[in-house]
Amino acid sequence: MSTVKGNNPYLLLTATMVLWGSAFSSSKVVVEQVPHGVAALLRFGGGALALLLALRLFGRRDTAVSARDRGRAALAGVLGVFAYNVCFFWGLALAPAMDGGVIIPVMSPVLTTAFLLVSRKERASPARIAGLCLGVAGAVVFFIGVWTGGGGTGRLAGDLLFLLGACCWAAYTLAGPRVLAGIEPLRATTYATLAGAVLLGIYSVPEMGRVAWSDLTPGLWLNVVFLAIGPAAVANLLYYRGVAAVGPASASVMMFMVPVFGTFCATVFLGESFGPVQTVGALILLGGAVLAVTQGRRWPSGRSRVAGSQGSDLRRVSGVSGQ
Image (cartoon, rainbow, N blue to C red; front, side, top):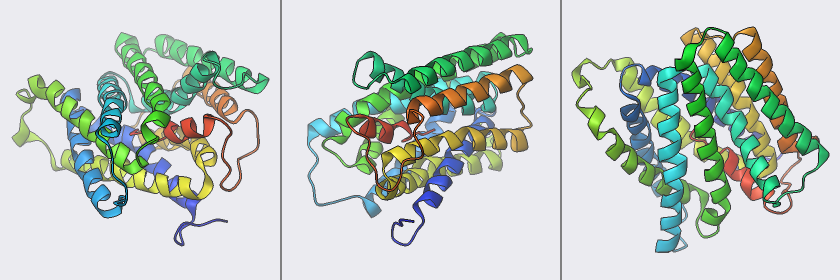
């Protein structure tokens, strides 16, 4: 199997998915102690600093970056960092982390694929249509499970915010090829995160005065440090190294491991659980998403590249974010 500087690329990608999956539960712990806007700022303000350090250590220095390219990356950060994380952390304040760990990483590629089909930038193969229909059906069943399972309107509102966050991430995904056309991925992610963190700082100003900073627990600060360094910085570095070895198609398919790790962490560390209807809906949704993205093909091999724009779009699907 191919390697990157002696490291197994699939181990790097698996580590990335573990970090992204764990971020849902870890972020839930933070948002339980501070308002959602402040929680988002703490995570991505720290993430911006960590990415700046990573860019200093690992970024390419042999190419100049135009002001236009910086501007594109910053505008992408408005969607992929600011808007996405307002929805994400606000959703966490209302709904379990487990819900977000399924809705966001699964619905994002479904929505991206749907847009590419509607805009005729991708072919509407039978497998993709079937996968999208399954994904929509699974989402409907999942939300019915929330409504009928005693989750209340608060949880339903949180899940709808997660869905809106998935829409923001899909839009960020679709903007990715244009942003990456003139700038390396790590540098683009750093600029986007910086722009988003600045906006999150402005957004969270009204909430700052409501935080009893001296009462915040060491556990919260440990979670903030983990979120900034792990899911925000280290995960992106590992992901880009994995993509370089196996290609964007194989790397993006591994994104479907995120709900597995997210559900595991939410169950073990937060004691959360799904009802029977939600479980069925989540499984249908996940199956449909995999079918829509892979088109029923076997696992892509080696450094294969997907024809047309799909490879570029898939590369951005799991730049999570974030997640």
